[in-house]
Length: 309
Image (cartoon, rainbow, N blue to C red; front, side):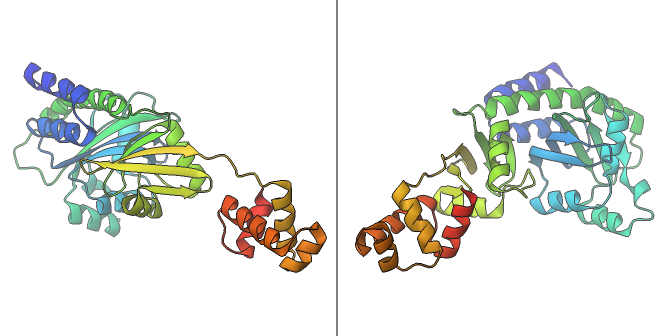
């Protein structure tokens, strides 16, 4: 890669937003490699060829293609090849792995992803790291694969390093629990504390796609609260800028606690009033206060909230 392109790449890593940098980086790569799409991944690699992705930058990769790729059984041949050759760029011809796998063949044909150029850092297993994969369709006759791999080994380390710089700069919003997501809910970057809070609110959550109910709530109202985790977001240039915080557990007063327990047990307002030595109106007000503090609307939900407190 020329010095002029390298200057553009690293300047963009410092100055551009994540989507803008992704466009720049992959455009520069297309000048030297015949690729049509690509992806930076930030997460963990596993020995079985799978990856747990926390956040990613995509270039010409639709959400449908991304999730179809992630849901395929078995390991990804490109990841397995990259793990076996960590620290250098490798080429994977996916056709060699599709001869006895009609589902894989259909996937390759649907998205024209016959070739992958991949780089993962040395010894990436078991720790959070970053990797990059570039895809191409059917290569033109006469192209030298050894020359293409040489170009990939020259370009991909710079691309990966520049993306790492950009990700750290771009996720530097104030506050410890912050994240940036594309408008379709795919995380571009996030802090460790933000991912931890998301996992508390949605235990079955699988990054990098944010939970659908969270994205819908943020787009509609700008705020969602689930299981004591509050998430707010603002839309900036088609990006969701998220802030997360854990709200303190609500504390009922002794009177509210007693009224709530009696109500869950089936006692009427009058019965609770006699038991507590107060008026039915006071019982109603205390019970409504307990409902509001616990964020519930009926006695069934109240019973669950009391059991979990």
